[in-house]
Image 1: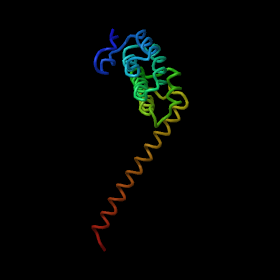
Image 2: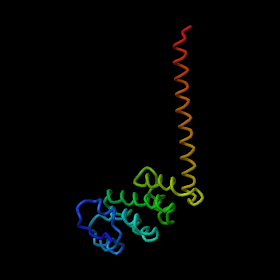
Image 3: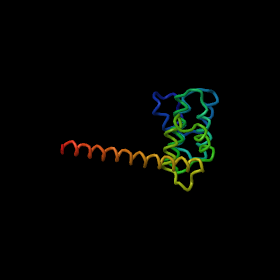
Image 4: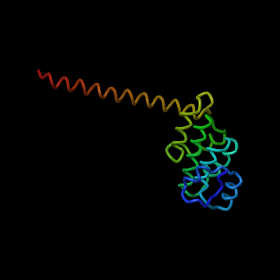
Length: 155
């Protein structure tokens, strides 16, 4: 069990797996709970890590909050699902902020049928936007190719 908060460097907290030590440190306001919650996402069950990830999402330090959202994305990658509370926390934060990458990880690694309605709509909108952008870029290349061919064959 990795429980030592005093080891140098944040990378040691990625091996953190002691739920009671995390709770105690969070209550005391010491250490780096956002970084350590990533370790909990790696080493604990989703049910055990989820409430702590949500608590870390409410931290006042923006860097530590960002790590909490990274932990949510990590949980989606590892488990292929999230708890309803984590889905709601990601939805509340919304795309474009701290939750952007966690939302993308969720849309990538959680099966569509298991997503809540908001995430299903988000996945559909993102897919349509990506397809339209792809068509737009391809049409631009085609137009450029035609224009180049016309310039080579001056009349």
